[in-house]
Image (cartoon, rainbow, N blue to C red; front, side):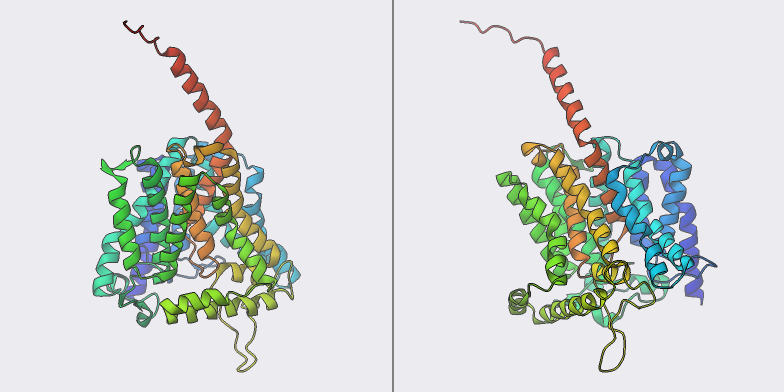
Length: 462
């Protein structure tokens, strides 16, 4: 009981601490510090039921703190915000519970409750990414904080990879997931103060993707604590490997390889393919026109346990997709209705992937809006950044954040560990996509003015 009281006290205290961070630091730094500190150190999973509201957990503590901080420290920026067409997908996703609940006979209140949850878990972080980005320096600050997100977690991850995941149990008095699930690849998979070791792997992979791109394209322009970005990138990459999440390691390696290919060849089509990979995969899997058996065989030669796990997840996709297609437009709604029943024992089957859950609960309306929310800002940004500029130091922070979002989007097909770090990243890229043309025009003007202002070169002597 004392442990539960301590957990609740910490969650409520963050409603004061988070806005205080945003008031003291202001701007992007305050927002990102609130997200990183809250997600790394608040207790996961547990919470308290509040009358008429969803359970008050870490997710809502961070979201409420962010909204309060925005209202207190940047209400003027909020009043200036004007939605654009690019914001339509997240608006549809936020509102998706309403038609889903009504068409399934669950009532308007149930739909409002789902909309409330989507507003805070997805809408608030996205809104901050739209409100706070006004120039390339803001994007650079966000990208550096993506790197900080990984760096601040390194000491805890290294300790737990050696001593076993104990921090949450020692400080908050409970384990977020069973201890036996932490033994992986000859050691311990760190959990920190997150829901699962897989979430830790996703966290480090996201941070590592941003750090790698900054190192590849802007190592001379971006330094942290007056040290080269390569130093911190190496630390994050090593810790990502020690997090022992094979999926996250593969995603980081694949994203990095794509980035190097684009940097070398200038063929941005590789980035487009990476962004569209979740949509294409889900399209062929839902239609069941392709089977990933060759992938299973390749992984089985390296790690049979991971191959079996992946096979189980794909089997989930097939089963849940067939069930979801019975109500394809608005889905089945909540309360486990999206889960098909096992014919043998009559129990509802489990599911891991967020995209599979969304398809079952909200149907094509929810799934398409979620995929569009993740992909359209990145695609528009790539379209508006002309030529080889996509690999220049100027756009390195934006492209790095985009690569981190790609890791998130692909991982959501297998897991359901979304964080405000990823959602604010999507909002940031949406802001960049909207303002990219204006920024490029301003840069060209400054370059021309600088050339005009330069004195003529002295004549060379014979």
